[in-house]
Length: 163
Image 1 (tube, rainbow, N blue to C red):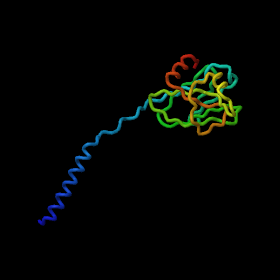
Image 2: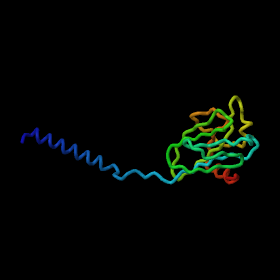
Image 3: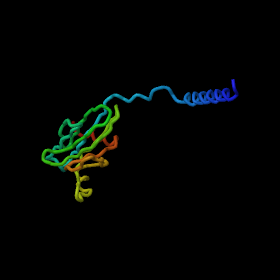
Image 4: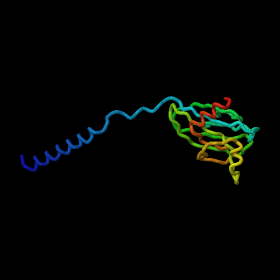
């Protein structure tokens, strides 16, 4: 055998050995399985006189889950993944549409809020008892919108309301 051939075989074997050592450092187990339990979505409407005569409807993935009156909440369970939430009212031509991603076994708290376009300021939301952070929407043309609540605030709010 020529020295060139032996040298080439040595380089190839050394390269394969380095690759094997490199790949040995990576785990061979599959990633942690996703929690398959349903996510719990709470829709909360505080007990106030603002908007008392209206009960906006909530839809998830195009299906109605109910209308919500002041001083109450709706609990909905959905599988983990992406979902579309719509808040609307029969007398309103607009709607609020948002996409959310939920994880299995977790709880999410959404506050039904009054849309304050055109300088509504802070008076109307504070009178309505709103405490959440406004949620990003794909469509925001209706009288209502959603706020995201911190889980601790959500649990405290639910404990004061009727289902």
